[in-house]
Length: 362
Ligand SMILES: Cc1ncc(COP(=O)(O)O)c(C=O)c1O
Image 1 (cartoon, rainbow, N blue to C red):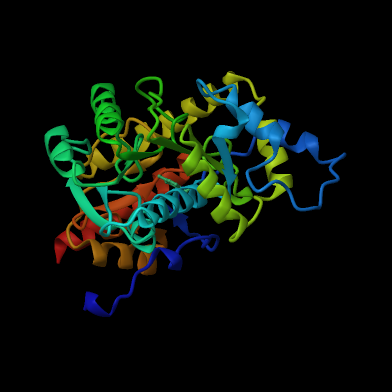
Image 2: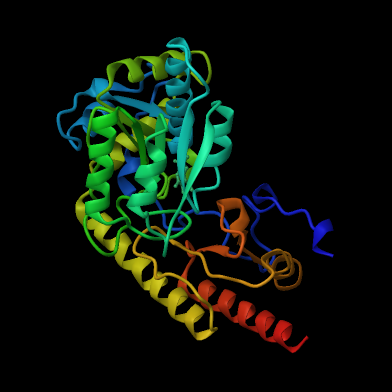
């Protein structure tokens, strides 16, 4: 029966209302900081902006990153465009040098856009499987040697895990020694429950970040990449000038205002996420599910029997949106985002419990 059940993430993105509880997309429900509205009364910018991004925003970011100037950043349409441009720029630079189709290493389970982006850019994907949601460096090292680029994401969507700092240092070293690009997707860097973020550094490290998650600004579409590799930055700007051109300038002004918010804003957010993490984690353990305890971001990835039927039935019979683990390279699991308030998480867990109970009787 499940073969006729077509499931795609696009079916669920933006779906809300009508008693639906969405554990679907990773969209913070918390409002952006009040500072971002302050720019609006006097705002008067409607012309094309710099392709690389507004200077004031890049200068504000340069203060947060070591050995940087505004030149090391490109402001993009969310982290999504930064990932796409970085991958395509690396592939393009490779192509100009000649040589065979380059390979890109992915840590599986991975954020669901990684695989299509890697393939659109013309890379051959290679996989290293995470164990308990973490990189096994021996396998990583063996496979990465043959690759031009690797994507890492800590804290991770969909696992909610944070990599050990020792592993991240080993990755920095092999990137430096072999000239392999590391695209370090740090969109959840401010949402870590267990330690401070570790910023990867090096000439071949490209850091990808975004205002979407930390500041609850997903729809404004402001992200960026940071790289000390001038050739890469120049190639990305060139590609962006022929594709999306500048990122929305009003959104960049709002993002620039967000860089001025006090650290207490971020600390307050983390407390809310941690409370929600505890509710969903405890609730799933009580339902007898097998899952990792999230250390960052806002996702859990429990094992679920017959995940396709689960996702389909939860939506059609119980009005609960969940995402198939298969989209993230984890076919025996289902991903839940807990970016929703505590009452809704409890209600959603209750519906999941009722469904699992009913299923166990058949
Ligand atoms: C790991 C990861 N990278 C990138 C993105 C895309 O973020 P943005 O809204 O900045 O494009 C997401 C969004 O869910 C994500 O989880």
